[in-house]
Image (cartoon, rainbow, N blue to C red; front, side, top):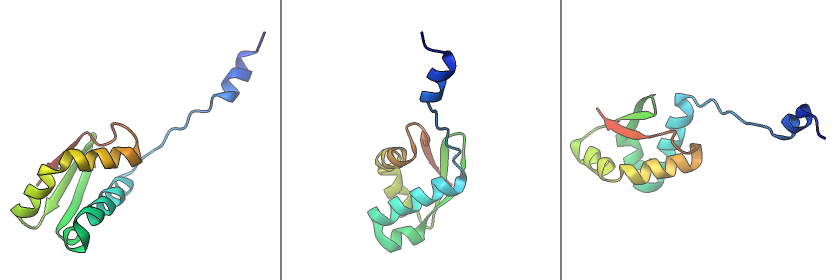
Amino acid sequence: MRALSDLLKKKKTRVLALTDKDVFYIFRRIIKEEYGNVGAAKIQPDFFKNSTLFVRSESSTWTAEVFSNRSFIMRKMNGELGDGVVREIKFK
């Protein structure tokens, strides 16, 4: 029979502590990939709280563009950060 401590040693859980900077970095990289340098300059993350990313943009045109593609952006972000890290993108 195996000891419980042996089983616990084998199973290693990894808990990631994500900061705003981590989420912002991934967001900026995805925006730059999708919209280039111009989009990256016009669309900026503002803050991240309770799985919601708040974003600022310089114009309503950029807001509409990101709003229409927000599910795609969230899917890409969660693919890199982990499922359910970003559940919503809101605009200021």
